[in-house]
Image (cartoon, rainbow, N blue to C red; front, side, top):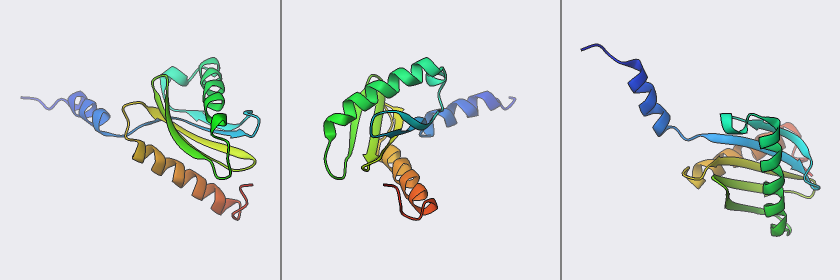
Length: 120
């Protein structure tokens, strides 16, 4: 029997954690940077609409060092913030939140390292 490469790819797709989008917003909810990794969010309108809903939900968690996990629509969203910027990692609602949180931590730590610890 011949080996079917497409069957192997389907199994890998089921096992690999995926990030749907990464967003960096300013304190007013305006986009600093973003990148979508799924076809559902590839259009500018879809990503902008999700950005607005995410910011509206996360601004309810105002405090000193903010960070949270929540589910919005079909997405699990983790975020951290500083006085000037909010960092979001968006994954499918079925994704493990710890994996998404690890991506967020790596993003924030990398940016802090590149900017000499000056994220504020």
